[in-house]
Length: 340
Ligand code: 13P
Image (cartoon, rainbow, N blue to C red; front, side, top):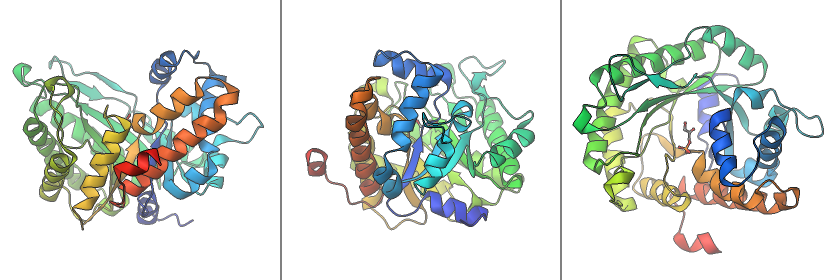
């Protein structure tokens, strides 16, 4: 495989393919395992992720890359094969989450700042040796307008950190996934999401420009423009698609090769239907695909429930979601395929 940043980025958003976000921190994967009554140990986490990476058909056809957590990039399958080799063997690219999580932003109650820049150059060099060719850094922007959240300071400092991270990645030969997640947890309407995401993306591209980041070697991982969960409103896929694309045309340069959405708490099928609607109104200047965590994994986790005998059912559930999202990335998904 070519090692040019723009070639890696292009491969990450190849037609009909998207990214599997399997980079849950130890705390987050414990929450997911609690929900299916599975104890979270190094071995159970390994067994679970191994079954995903061994879903060879789905991986080959629909998963361009996998975002790993620090523990996973160093782990071996039960038979001793490094998990990274399983991913590469399926023609997919290993990636790594490198941020150290969102912490309260001093002086700005309700806002967070993502940490992890100190020592990042050295960590990236090690991850490159371990096989990572792309990385992820997630900034978290909550919305609580009554409390003045997010502040301009939060948007400014988070996008500045994203740009510093992105520059270090490119220096190391690693494609940065730039993820400024505007959360859908709040009670806000879709237009408020539009405004906050617009302010965030506008600032983000100014910061990336100032930091001399080569946009052709980046992937944007944004939220869709969508109402907050606590608003009690459900937007149609057509409305989500129209507003999301309108926003991107205003803020995301055409030099960016691809946009890979997070699912952010949308249900499996909602995330698929929305991605499909977005691609159905193309053509667009960038590829638009998925980088889903929950929307790809909720079904296989439930099917698996920690039991070895359920591995084939879990792999089938994962393959189904991967295929549905692969079709949505082409604008070719239909509701009727969900039960086929
Ligand atoms: P979700 O799709 O579950 O939001 O996770 C994607 C991700 O990687 C968030 O950083």
